[in-house]
Image: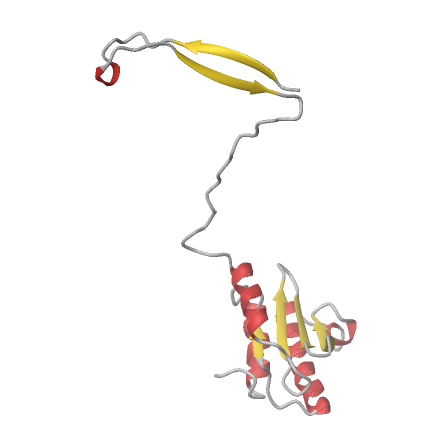
Length: 164
């Protein structure tokens, strides 16, 4: 059951809105079940410049990999590079290579940039084995091109995956 509290507000200015003021009665309803919450409106951050990650997620919806034309996804962290060939129809990873793999890194020992180039060469060998002639999209995950990414791209552009 609701409790009613009647409060009276008197305006002191006699000329408010051109008429003399009279007391107004406002009914305020108080109940145990009724709670009032304040409305908070927050502005969206980066309205003019969207995040590269958000843009990348939208692009991934548009380009899907198939067994004959997979999607090439490359992620470059602060120190390493990771590359995958993805068949989105069957939800399979056709190739995975990174600069951390011992087979790529130790024969002979090399720097991370040289290892990124070797990952690209391993990707080309795998594509020849799987009879893949082209990729559906090249996905950099919204990241900028650094030294490792450029070394990887040079290795795969010689095969014709990327335009020169």
